[in-house]
Length: 146
Image (cartoon, rainbow, N blue to C red; front, side, top):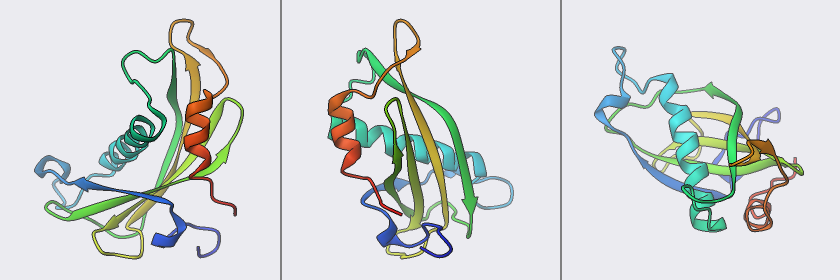
């Protein structure tokens, strides 16, 4: 970390490859800024599905995105091979703050990094609820102490 910013590969605990697509590029020849948020959402939910057993279609409690931000340091473009690093910056009773970093494959410094907050809600009642135990256990494996 530099000045508290997670910009190196070792600032993250879990990694997923991402395939860039032709449609990710914008008219300026690089991945459009809004696409990074899709990458964030994809790796977070993939982790929850794989590591916490989240059933995205039927689980009674799900995470709703309530905040996100992204800082861009260097561009990526199709057909770059990229990897997303994932960590948990903060875990509360009903919400979690993830940190996500986007790296070029084999790179040690992030091209972009940001935060993504999930608030957990009962799907039927649409009301805030505590993080389910299986999800909390999976999230705790990603907690980074700052």
